[in-house]
Length: 314
Ligand code: SER
Image 1: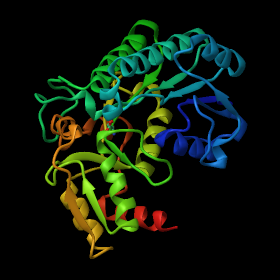
Image 2: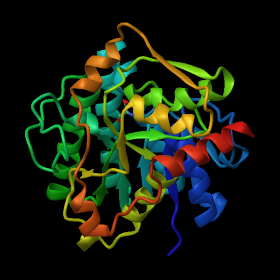
Image 3: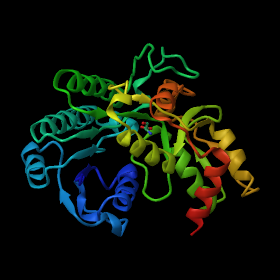
């Protein structure tokens, strides 16, 4: 069957790489990139392209009408740090954007919908280590609250209306192609840039703050593997725990020193992102993803660091 795929939020950190990958797998003309901004990064992301603000349902509806997509990826969102600066906008975009896409997907009989959740759905009373799929969830950022509510909506549309929605709780995603989007885990990208440019980095998280992370290559592969898995294998319709590795700024700096021996790490005295990071898991148990669709990461800290530095040097 010929797939037609809409990627909404195609110019962001994930969208940039997802569109390139999907355009290798599927015919270019059947992967439609949509964003509120014009693409300026990767030529592969250039066409077909549609301007859309997910909050403008009429405009979005015209795009569904024009392409009749069989798959939709909704990536447009405000992340944890930016969300705290504008809580109402974060709630509006993250929640009503999702509801608009779910409703139009039902109306236009889209076969599969992908929507990302996050480790931000967990909170201070969730188990910190090997956080399980099912546990106390008390997110205290507007981003985390919107992601947890969104997960419930995804499962609701699946159970009530039979919409095939699939989702992953991403950890911090590390990549070199497109800039990160205002998250708490962004330090783990900035550090590589500064290590090469200045030989030093000032971290906004403390040295021992451990967070779950993943290299973008793994994240894109895992996302497409979930979307390709037979529907009967998908036992979770809220969102899957998903992880690649866990590390602290200190361990990341030690790994960078293996390549740049004089690299120096220092810390900012206070940053509001520390409180967000401290409320999140240090590591994630993703055994459902392993069991249901054979999830297995390929990048550990050493391999990721080598790949990041090599690509950023170019
Ligand atoms: N990387 C995201 C953030 O820090 C977590 O989903 O906001």
